[in-house]
Image 1 (cartoon, rainbow, N blue to C red):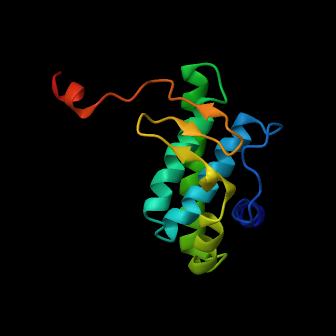
Image 2: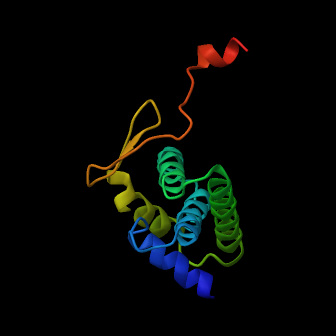
Length: 139
């Protein structure tokens, strides 16, 4: 039941990128929101969300190992939220999607190179630059 309340708080617009939140808490919050949106077939908005979430998580830690742990926590929270929604339907999908699509995270701008500009102007760059498709095919 605590997870249901937590999920509702996330979808209500709780600022998931607040500076005083721990990186693990951030991963759990971002994953829970993604899972609820996925369960409700969020589509394209979920794709953008996951790029932004990836940048937020990668830029909240210093090492590749810490980033891997955050990625695992994100996926665990996402899967738990999907299962919860499929099992208990804590909130109608129409409401989930309305809240998900109105999250402040969607004020961020995603650039073609994978960089993200936050609503306060802060730039988050990929730690591992995205290679053009043509470079990947040359291998």
